[in-house]
Amino acid sequence: MLERTRASRARPGPAVALWGGAGLGWALLLIVLPLVSPQPAHHGVAGALASGASPALVLAVVAAAWLLMVAAMMLPTTVPMVRMFQVVSASRPRAPVAMAAFLAAYFAVWLGFAAIALPVDLGVHALVAAWPWLRAHDGLVPAAALALAGAVQFTPLTQRCLTLCRDPRAVLFARYRRGVAGAWSLGLRHGLSCVGCCWALMLVMVAVGVSSLWWMAGLTAVMVAEKTTRWGPRLLPVVGAVLLFAASVLAVDAIAAAPAGGGTGPGHAH
Image 1: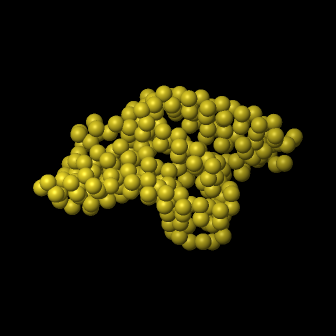
Image 2: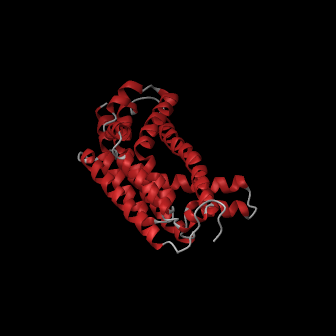
Image 3: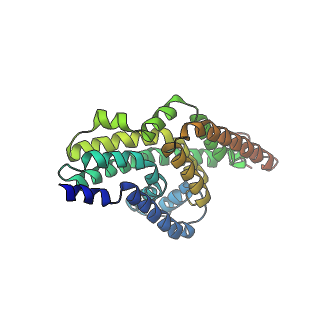
């Protein structure tokens, strides 16, 4: 028993594996993203579908790219919950399988979010294509995404979900069940909390283009700081104010830079 305890203490914690997985995700993104045109994600999807590519293949590639981005950006933010889950499940049978089920459920929630976000994004840009005035002021689309993300920082839902992610003991003690099914259920619950506090920031990624590594790095730093540090609660209003300011600057720039004589409504041609 003593030897087992010592071996358990010597074993690296989950933070090492999570940061390692995130590092691998970033390394793969650095290889893959430069090969992609620096345009918003919807252009690649719509273009691939218009070219006659198999919809199933296109969706599979999009899903794989999205999960890779989630791994790079979100795995470090899950350290508090995963660390506690490992502690309570380490002595249970099939503990590694339970951990795999927990993480699979977490990624499944984010994949479900993508299944909603991508059609919304495609619809927004279809509106831009059909509305000449908005097409002439297309910078308003990322400005709106920034404004939404900034406003969401001040909502009670974001604050509540961040609390659950930062200190997940309440969720763990209330919902932990032994076995793979229990781990899957807990992973879903944690994934929903994570989406609840980060969905608007991830929409910013969709709006500005997933090939923007600087945006990805900045948003990752914000989410890690908000969800894993003691000063995360004080960071919320600061990030919200910065995002709202950036949205206003981008909106003003989009309107000022628009060419004269832009359309005024749907159906009006340049």
